[in-house]
Amino acid sequence: MRTDDLIATLARDPATTPLRPARIGGGVLALVMVCIALFLTLIGLRADLAHALTTPLVAVKTLLPALLGGAGLVAVLRLMRPEGADTVRQRGVLLAALAAAGLLYAAGFATQARSGWFADLSPVSVMECLRSIILISLPALALSFVLVRRGATTAPARTGAALGLAVAGVAAAGYSLYCTQDNPIFYVTWYGAAILSMIALGAIVGARLLRW
Image 1: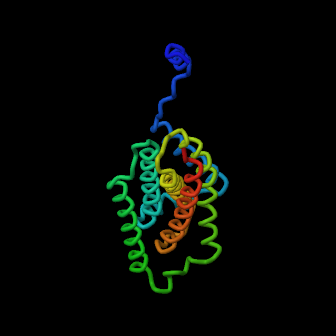
Image 2: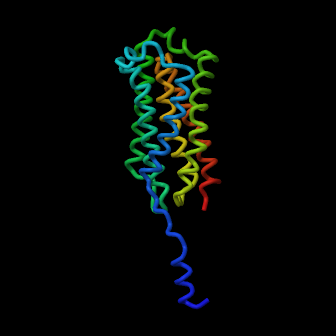
């Protein structure tokens, strides 16, 4: 093929759609919010939600996973680009979250009698928590991969893990508006377990689906 023919062929090709991280981030967030809305429509909010949110140890049950979800989403949008990488700031956010979880554990032990430390850890309540957060997260995570595939990550497993964190963090925050288990020992453990399971799933799927 002559050079002039090659140039003419390339000129006829449609222009590549530019990557818009803000739009993708908004799409991921919207998907999770729709799943949360459907869940809460079916199951309802806790009856004393307004009063409960005035209690710091209850409010942080919503705030901490929401912040983790936000940090995960920022990481996804960075990692979608070939030059993206996890930064010291992102690692700092995760370390701060781990420190906060440790403080919440300490507060749970300090503010309750010994008999109440593990009173909420019944198989029924644990399974309800894990099942609910995972059920909210799964459809949102699956659809979010469709959006994130528009990027060009060089770290597919990490990008998938960050996406799992983003989706599950926001999902856990949404679930907390229904959950009446206000013991930090309970919600740090089982919200954390649900979020970690979605991080692992995201990493496994991302390693396959986001690979060039």
